[in-house]
Image (cartoon, rainbow, N blue to C red; front, side, top):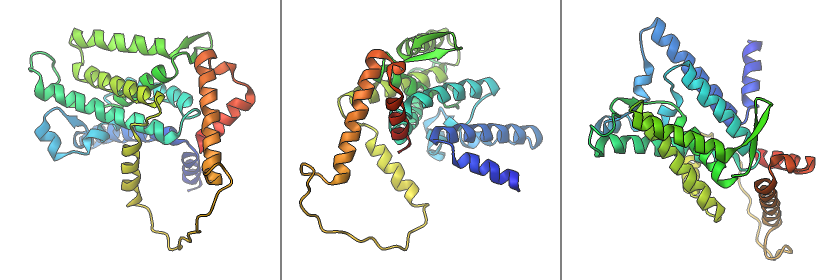
Length: 290
């Protein structure tokens, strides 16, 4: 019992992407065990079918397919890349914004997969069957980082640095190459859908527009249905004149905080993450936790 409590405590202290990685691992292990011992593949009810008519019968699969993987190497590669991307993004951006990119990438990748399967001639791309794996969401995050912070570097194997934009170029080129080789074409079409979402999201965000805000509000509203209702009454205070340039104290502090984050991000884009001072790194870390 104490072991379960320890595991539960550790899980609750993970960040959002840490929890997603754990959930993926648990689902993979449970599905593997049920397939081996019970001869029951539960994945069939959650993976994304290529047929639009089949999708109508399980619409939840447009998101749930991202939590099922075809094999050990499939989940290992996706979760490792997700782990590294989460380390970069959640210290610089709101975690919920990064969740928007990830889940919208999964959705957009699934839509691209079904569109090709149901609209284009069947002899052009072989995409019949089902789609599974979080690759489209990971692809969206990768492209987001590459577009928003093209000069940011990651240290590989503790030996050399490489820019995320160069990593993205290699991944996109490799996926396009394998797409036209005829291997796993449905999966690579979903990857490309994720890349497109990540590119559009970062491009618009650079102009000050968060295209995922509506999706975030929708998901917040959905999850609020499952939260217990508070019996506490909300007391509203009358608004008066503010001494913070027409803003409330909270709005003024949030504005200054975002300006500081933007200045640090600009510094990263020009000189890389390692150019930050310890105080700037600590500030970003705390901001990512908010």
